[in-house]
Image (cartoon, rainbow, N blue to C red; front, side, top):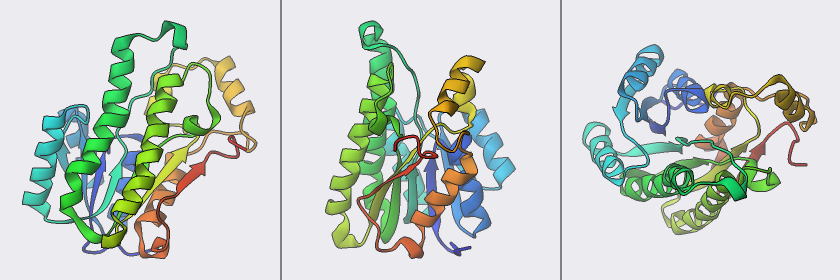
Length: 242
């Protein structure tokens, strides 16, 4: 395992799922980890379980993002690893999409992620690694996921430009696009057995992914072994997008 001793890692949405699994892995590898989330009790509970630091911030609010950047700089100095992971997943056919749901998805998944990157760039160390959590939805275009897929496709476009803009500082920027992963978000979607079987049937490896498997990829991209990788989107989906 790569050592992350003396490295500072910030993970948005780190109180559950992929963010939680990544925080666990980086902490065990020696990093000083800070997780964020909008629900104070949930973030503090997760931080206690993981034995990491926590800060409360709602990624859909620019004022929270600005406060987060200031607090990270004040308490921890420079950041070596930034995982922009917080997001929402909601589906509806284009015909029935409401403005409020459209705005909610875009405010968190795109606008919030964009400005989290923007406001934390000055806090990043040279040679830092930034990972944006995207989705295979941006690649396979599933029905009823138009806004969600668009938010992630937009994030992938920003990732490539950020990789170019930050290359002079040797800061690497990549995105990771999971397929269906067994996380809290999947439970919240309330999938019935038929839909679950259809989803598994679309995956050549015939199962959902694990949060820890995605976390392992993120951890690799965070370390020195990935020092020549930037501007890339990594699909981790059991072959679903093939």
